[in-house]
Image 1 (cartoon, rainbow, N blue to C red):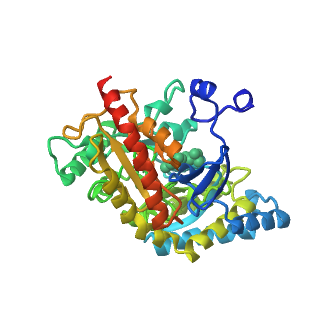
Image 2 (image 1 turned 90 degrees about the vertical axis):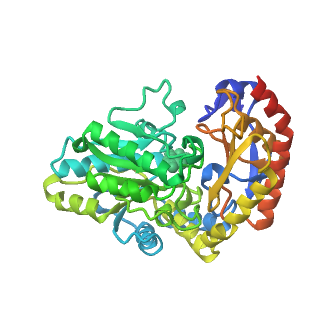
Image 3 (image 1 turned 180 degrees about the vertical axis):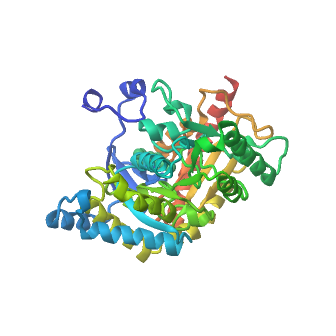
Length: 458
Ligand code: PMP
């Protein structure tokens, strides 16, 4: 029935036709049960999103209560509701107190990471139109970035596979270098020198295009889908200087890094960012309800406020912006993150995840790099560790390992830009669950290694 009725996102139609779907029945904590009754540890937290783990009754209760009380309320024309007001205030308080970002001023709600980035892009246009700078509109993203799949957010995404045959990117979106030190550094370049080269690339692009035409730079604090690319030493500090020099806004896409993933509440705090607009989704509700948010800075908000009489209503917003059920679910989710110390748990277990991966896999001839921050880690495959030579295009060693890992009872993701398996478990995971998961993953790598040798030879 799946094959005859469902049209799957980000799935090979040919593979699905040949192999059929993998159906999951239920999940609790970090563990899922597939249709065959196999216990599987989800080291991906779904798509980096189930931060508190599966099956929390508190969120089900919050949703049920909200549905019974006020099942829907829009925010158009000044209408509002308590749960959404409280949530906006709570997000601002978290940014101010836990991310060292006292300049954040208001919160706007949507339903997905993609639409949050579309909203960010429209806000940037609006802001510069209101400032009398209609030519200042281009957005610079990065190769390897993932920002979503709509026409605008899919354009911001810097992974060619998401553009192919969709006529993307749209005009006005540019991609600068991916700051991936392991894969991109040249001739023994130090990390600091690599950062300088990345930042010089960015500034050269701005100058080439004309600073008067460049409005914003968008970045994930840690690139997720593009391969768990950690910012190299001092990267965001140096980028911020360039942006300040040319009056360019910073959009922080915290769809993955928000709500504890990096071992702090937000990547903004972890890396000392000073964003003008932040996009949030995933961990906001731990994916129990589709919900996203944009947090905007005082400098954006004051322009919107000052031009409001002249412009009339701000004509952007969704039917589900600030949905009361989503807001109640998000509040219950943030309660659990706070009360159970999940951000602290992510920070405390980060070294355990990395050391487990390093101890079990550090000697494998096809694993070149193991890296991570908080509960976000990557294993990167190369054909030759000495030269860092990649596997031939299309051989996909990481897909083979991920498939074998699923058979061993652990989910990892095979990413589409670098040959990386990623790990981003629920922040509720325990040390022994990490050990068990990495044990299963290491067994999959051991099974795959002879096949990887054959892949390289092919
Ligand atoms: N930004 C980032 C950093 C993401 O990781 C994702 C989703 N993987 C998105 C945006 C898009 O979110 P959604 O799939 O909810 O549209």
